Length: 177
Length: 398
Image (tube, rainbow over all chains, first blue to last red; front, side, top):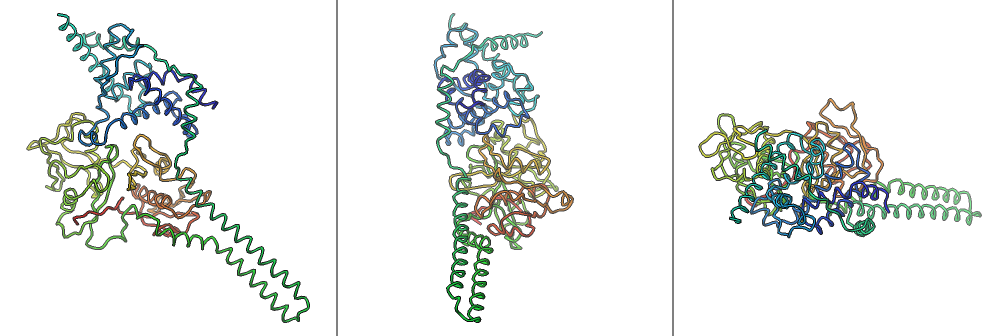
C-alpha cells in the first residue's frame, strides 16, 4: 500500500469524509468523491510544495472535487438558461435524514435541514469553520480567498441559517397550534 | 450582546455538536478502489509524443546500421581488389571516401532532414495559429477582441475577429458590429452578446447604458463574467467604462455594489488551453502574477477548477536571460533537455509564450537553444514578434 495514502488516510480520512458528507449530504456520493480526492492527491503529491499545510491542501482538493461534482450534476441547458451561479447555488437535499442525524436532537436536525438554504460557498465556510474547526486563516487558504471574504461569507451564512431556523420554528409552532 | 449575536453563537454551538460521520469502508477497500481507478489508462499528451519520438530513434538506428554496412562493403571490396593497379586502388579509395562521406553527410543531415520531413508532413496536420500577427493583416483590417464565456460559465475566452475598416468610423463601431453578429454557438462557447444595452463613445469616454431589466447582477458569477467581458476592452487601451442603468447614472450590482465607473482589470497571467469538443483556445489563466516567470510556471499546471490544460509541458525547462530584461525582447534560454517535435502541442506552447510575453509588455521573443528550427509558420532561430490578439475566429457576416 502506498505510504502516502496510508499516512493521509490515517491522519485526515475522517475529517475529509465528514467535510464531503456535509457538503453533498449523501453517503454514497461522499464515498465516491473521497476516492477522487485521493486519486488527485496521489497524482499531484510531488507538486505539493508545502506552501500551505497538508491539511489545507487536502481540503482545497476536496472542495474542488465537490465543485466538479455539483457542476456535473447540472445539465448544460440549465447552466445556460438559468445562468447558474456557483457561489449562489443552492443545493436542495431530497434525501431522508441520514441515520446519524436522525438520532440527534431537534435543533441539530433542523439546522442540518437549514444548510440547504445556504449557497455552496456559504455551506463550505460553515462546515470548514464550525464542523471541521479550521481557523479563519486556514479556511482562507482552503478556499483561496482573503480572510475578509471568509468573514463576510461566514457572517452572511450565519444570518441565513438564523433566519431559516426562526422561520422553521415558527412554521412548526403554527402547525402544532 | 444583542439578540442576533446570541442566536448566532447558539448556532455555532449546535454546529459544533454535529455528529461525526464515518466512512464504513475499510482502508484496504478504499485503496483497492482508487488503485483500480488510477490504473485505468488515460490519454496523455506525452503518450503521443513518445509514439512520435520512437520512430525517429528507429530511423537513427537504421541509418547507423546502413553506414556501418557501407563502410564494411567498401573495406571488403578493397581487399578483394588487392591485385588491381594503382589507379584502381586510388579509385577505390576515392569511392570509399566518397561513400563514407556521402553517408556521413546523410547521417549528419539526418536531423535536419527529419525536421523538414516533419514540417512537410505536419503542415497538413498542424492546426491553425492561435493568435493574430501583424503580418496577417492588411491595411484596412481592424482586430476586434471580445471575451465570450465558456459553456460552463467559468472562463471568459478571448476571441478575435478581423473586421474591414469600412464597417464604421470609430473602433467602437467595429466592436458593436462583432457583438451583434458573432455566433457564439459555432465557436462552442456560451451565447452572450450583444450586451443588454448600448455601448457608446461620448466625451472621450466609453459608456455602457444597460437596460433596466438586464441580468448581469443575477448572481456573483454573472457579475464577474460581465466585468471580465468588459476587461477585454483593454485591447483598445481603455482604462474604464462608465455604467448607466436606464436613465440613471451607475449600476447597482447585488454583490459588487453600485458602480459608476468600472476600472478595466489589467492584471496579467500566463495562457492555458481551453478545449471544447472541436475547438482549442488559448486563454489567460485565472491566476494573476506580477512576474512573467511565475506566469510561465503557472502555464505548466493544469487548472482543474477552471478546466484548463497546461501549455508548457512540465519537462520543458528554460530561463529568462537577465541581460535582455530591460529591452523589449524576451530571451528564453532552453535547457535543451527534451526532444521537441513539430506538433500542435509545441505550436501551442510557442504561441502561449508569445501571448504571455505580449501581456507582460514585450515586443519580441527569442527562443535560444531550443532544439527545433521551426514550428508551423515560426522560424525559431530568429526573434519572433508577439501577436496582436489571441484566438482568431471567422464570422459569417463580415
